[in-house]
Length: 180
Image (cartoon, rainbow, N blue to C red; front, side, top):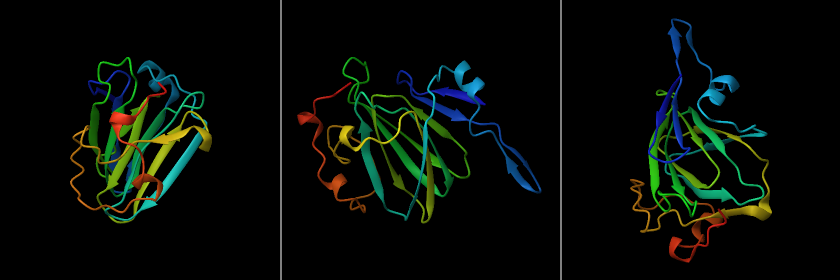
């Protein structure tokens, strides 16, 4: 398992060792000991999975304290442009974003610590996305930021995505008061 630094404190890209042969492939998608060695100390308490068509944007979402979530995300089928924004006020990368393609072919996983807003754009139809979360869902602490806020300068490579109703109306970063 290769641990790849991203330039954001605590945000880690994980490239698992994949064993392929004529039967298919095998890899460890989670190994508590190896994750502890990489500095990932979260206990994951909920797994989520979504199915999306091409051209969907989900996010940018977070849960505020006391129910903030760290996440370990990956693509099971298809491909996404995965995006996080650092919303930790004391961070040197506050308000900056990180983007990476996660695909069924590259097997990459992204560990997202508490204090990041997270979203993704689907690049293929029938994309299955998996999240391991360090806290269960609490709707009363759910928050979000405007997916296409010009402050972030995120190149989503799409002009008119399909959005949920709530994702259409999240606030701009210049009005945002971070709970982190």
